Structures are given as C-alpha cells and as structure tokens.
Amino acid sequence: MRLAVPIVICALVAGLIALLFGGHAFVNYDTAYALLWGDDLASGRAPDLEVPLAPTPHPLANVVGMVLDPGGAELLAFLWLAIAGFLVLRLAQEWFGLAAGIVAAVLFLTREPVLSFGLRAYVDVPYLALVLGALLIEVRRPRAGWPVLVLLALAGLLRPEAWLFSGAYVLWLRDWRLLGLAAVAPVLWVLHDQLITGDPLWSVRGTRQNTAELGRRTGPVDLVLYGPFRLGEIVREPVLVCMLFGAYLAYRKRIWIALAAIVLALAAFALLATAGLPIITRYMLLPAALACALAGGAIVAIVSIPKQRVVAAAFVVFLLAFVPNQFQRLDRLERSLGIQEQILADLDALPDAALSCPPVAVPNRRPVPHLALRFEGLEPREIEVGRLLKANTYVTPASEEVADRFVFDPRDRDQTLPAVPSTLQRVAGNRSWTVFSYTTVSGGGCTGAR
Image (cartoon, rainbow, N blue to C red):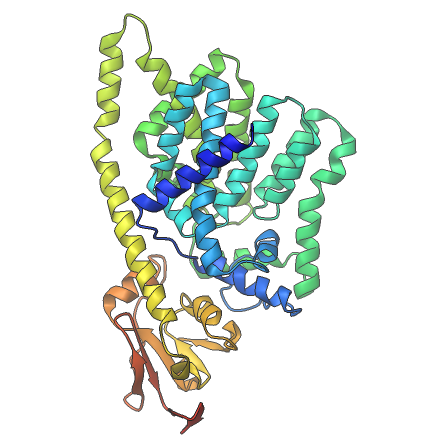
C-alpha cells in the first residue's frame, strides 16, 4: 500500500505532463545511439562506438536499449520526469514540510530545460531520479549503507558523477566493506569500453574529443565564467534567490545533508569540467533539483512569517512577476517539441525504396542515428556526413526551417547545407525531407549506381 501511492501519483503526473504537452516526446541524438547499440547487443553484435561524433556510451542505457524501442523510450520519458518531480517533493517534504515539497515539485516541473531534456528522453533524467532516490533513502534512514550505494551504482552507469558520490558516501560512513559496491559502476564502465573498443578509457577520450570538435566550453576558466549560468539557465533568477534563503534556512535548522548534497553536486560538476568534460546545461540537473527543494522551503517559510504580511506579500509579488515569462517559455517549448517530433515522423515516413541505394549521405550528423533506427540494414558508419560525392543517395531537409529546427545545433561551426549537384534527381520527399539520388529504384534494386 505504501508503494502504491507514489506509483499512482507518478502515473498521474506523467499523464498530466503528456496532456499539457500534447503527448510530444521523442528520442534525442544520444538516446537514439543508445537504442542502436542496445539492438546490436541484443543481436550478438559489438556496438560500433567509433562512429564519428558518436555520443558518450552509457552502459546502462545500452543494456536497456536491448529491450526498448523509440516508442517505449518516449513513454518512459514522461514517467521519469514524474518520478524525478516526486522525489524532489519528498526530499523537500522531509526537510521543510509537505507544503514546501509541493512548491518544490511545482518549481522543478515547470523549469523549461528540465521538461525539454526529459521529453527528449535524455538519460540525465533517469540518472537524476536514481541519485535523488539514493539521497531520499539516506534522509529517511541515516547511514543506510548498501541500498544507497545500489542506486548510486545504477546511476554511475549513466553518469560518472555518481562514482564520486559513492566514494564520498563510503568515506563518510567509514565502512570499508562497502568499497567494493562503490567501485561497481566505474569497474563495469571500464570493462564495457575495454570489451567493445579495446580501450578501457574510450568514454573519457571520446568525450574530450567531441568536446574539442564541437567547440564546447570546458576547463577551469570556462567553469568560472559559464558554470553559474548553466544553473541559472535551468532554475532562473527567482529560484536562485530562493535557493540562497533555503540554504540559510537549512543551516538554521541544521539540515546538514541538504547543504552537503548541493555542495557535493556542484563539486562533482566542477571536478569533471576541470578534467575536460563539457560545461553543458543538462549536467546541472542535479544541482537544479536540489535548488528547487531548498527554494520550496524558503518560499513557504517566508510567506508564513507571522506579523510580517507586508514582507510576505512583497515576496509573492516578486515571484509572480516572473510567471508570465515562464509560461511563454513553456509555450515555446511545446511548439518546438511538436515541430521536431513531426520532423522525425516525416523522416520515418520516407519510403524504404528511396533509401535502398547506398551509400546514403546527409548534410549533418543529426539525422544519422534516426535513419539507422528507422531503415533496417542502414548502419551509422555507412552514412556519409556532408560528403555527397561519395554517395548514391542524399537525404536533406526540405526547407531552411527544418534545417534550423532539427539538423543544425546552435554550436555547430558550419550551419550551411551542401549544394545539391545538378546530376542528382529527386526520388522521394515530404514536407520535411527530400531524397535525391544518382540512381533509379527498380524491382527492389538500384540501377545507374555509381
């Protein structure tokens, strides 16, 4: 019975998110590769992690990808968001009371980047839920030991920050018998890379290489210059202010675990950024969730101050002043998700025959894993990126809007579409995509292939 209530709440919240966002969800570039690699594992093939600009492989995501398809990942995206929001509520409730928990959950689930990453099925949201679950166990049952480390081990197969949390937890407990459990995630990750690529540090090297090639911020200087802004991008100014009040409130109430959790989360982000990993917004989801929990406590405490109605009223006015902008951000997100979901649906709707004459070329890396997921027998390594002269078939956006909305990332150095050679002829297309070819398709085969 005790477990049934959270399950029902999470299911209802997931349904509400799906309703408010028109059911819009899809798998992002990284998760699409995880599904491809999971399919490889399920078929007894070694995943090809060495595709140019392939994302960092996450062992747990690859394993889950063995039994999950894009539709399942999209459904789980709503559920993981709901679970993360519920855990934020429970943590704030344990620290500051039920009212603070409800406010914290509302804050968290109305942050535009949180919803954006969640509805694009990034693995960072399940990772967040696992870490918050481990923290809640520790809050409710101090020095719980192995249950905390089990959840952190699972989280550590999605993000390396969890390795640091496990180590810090064992160090704090001073129970050295738990060291083996704390080491499970990094050992399995290294074995995963070694068995597949022959390089036990493949994920580290690959992430650094992609960071450099994509021109992402990294290192100690960029950490100082841009790190705080990444947190602000998620929670926005009012929550940042309330977080500081909440941290003070936690200090006054001697809720040391709340302060330790957010300090450790920020320290882990800083350490990995200093080591060369990218400084990107979604890596700040854990500090953002904890910031919302602290902010929830602060908001309830301030509006409840006895004999200080003027202060409470002014504070409420300050918070409400930012509500219209937040609604605008969420409305833009809903429209953006709908457009991108439609673009992917149009990609899936291309006829199999149109792409039956390999090699296939695309203008940019973005469509690569989605094409490989949709068209059987088309491997990512066989898709040429931007090299039309080496291909028989070329899949390109049908408009500049599709290119801007889906193909190009704001950080891409080159945001121009290759010119289509006059020798290519259009063989298929729809509102989002056009397929050109040097060949004609006849009886299931290709004629005129170069």
